[in-house]
Image (cartoon, rainbow, N blue to C red; front, side, top):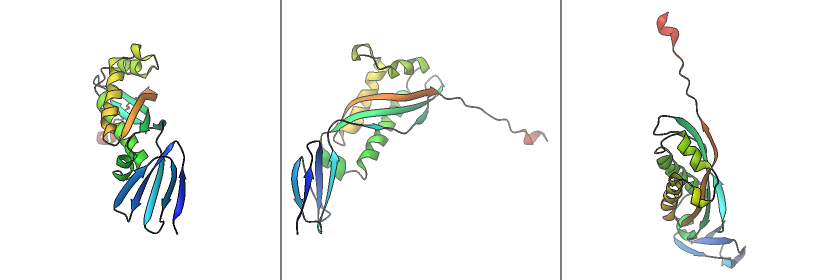
Length: 169
């Protein structure tokens, strides 16, 4: 007996028919055979994900703790769902990698502070534009359009080295 799934206006779906054939679509009523078809429904409209905190070293040698947020929308649901194991984890991982490549090139803590301010676009730093462009480029191949990337949390990290006194005994 076929089953129906109601897909909201803010969602899209991907069907895996017989495990191999992939079909996708948008909102509406979707019919499928549960014995032979698996259906995945995810949000395709503007959404946000928090990335895991990262400890990074800037070009100046300073160590910082960064937690990025990516705001995105799904443009190609089939590419995102059918070609990745976990859509949300892929977005977070790819964003974290792009943040790493941009932030490690930042000159100093002051440069990082400028990228972190939520100011109108015309006053944002070049580093902020590079960050957004890099994340957009990295996620485009997964069918994701990046709307914004910013740092929710940032802090200087302190490294304390303990001297092992066992050698002096």
